Image 1 (tube, rainbow, N blue to C red):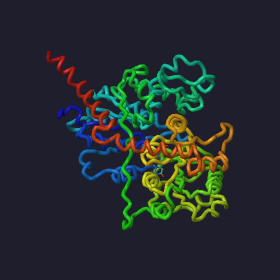
Image 2: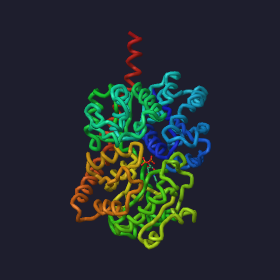
Image 3: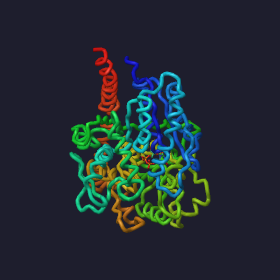
Length: 496
Ligand code: UDP
């Protein structure tokens, strides 16, 4: 086997929603023998709580011991970011400030030095270091292929669209793809005067210069967009759909004393009777919304498991970069302060559900036969996990790429129902929440039946994606054939 590209450097932005899929990519690269050494660079912010030790613990818990000699984790120094900036801008600041630290780390590495740099969307701001160290450049999107298409096309949109994208009367067009409603656009595009939009434009420019793009999706999930990306009409950069890359669910043996109590509780419930609720690895919802949510769950009459980041006075993504602070092992609410935000009605529901403060064993919950629905903020990892477990989704997108993701699952592939959220209302009412939960879970609902059937079909397809010679397996193999040819052809030319 060629020994070109034996060492890859992965630069991972802070946040468990980034670290988890990046680690899965790392494991695939190593276990499929594409890479013989891999260095994962992790980043964090100065005043956050995603302490290096927590990230390391999570990585170690998700990694088999035989990989410890191949996958090395390096913590870059924490970066100071202004607290009042939005998450996207913070990520951009962090990535730019990491460049000198990365240069230092790479220049002091002993042989073999990395020959391949892989980052994610915001991480692309570090791409200039690839030129300095003569590395090939790759982006890994743990986002939809539709989002890849948007990123590749945004510099063109920037030239041709006048005024705010959100003021456009027509949908935003990308060659060969489904049009995007202006209100569903990726958050950085919602205000062209904001620093975040300018950061995003620079990121898109960097992405247009990479050697290849890995995307955490698969054909049946986004067939039309993948065809468009392969057609060369959006860009000539090779795009490799290698999803679903999700972690393996932990085995929950009955006699295991560390068995999670949520799983114990699920064991006692009826098949497909429980709705799992989560807004991702760090999003907070307001006190008012928590109350409506609790009332909505009660009204639906369904049992539930609710993974909740303690609410704040306002909804927002403030906790996003700090996710993982207090990883709760047994899920019992830790602080009385958090518990007191729940309305009295909530306690009427005792026995009907479980609250998991901060961190739930999401994949294990979704895999459990008692789970019959997932009320999700539509983070892309959550969608892939739900598809892989065959669980239909109540789509409640909040920000970032989530509105586009909700369109994919509700409109394109029919594995979820989108909650009807009035743009002007700050809070989604309990009746709407209850109605939508019942739609996907009630056996007699016709739309719900079709949704459940479709997600189970996709589950079967997803299972085969990474089997030997399955589509994602082949995409990764092809990508490395091309990468190696890219190195060999110039050498052959020189030898002529
Ligand atoms: N997650 C989890 N337990 C929780 C909340 C989140 O295991 O209580 C995991 C979830 O399984 C997924 C990731 O965190 O792998 C969240 O990623 P996603 O893209 O869905 O959302 P983000 O947090 O990036 O908005």
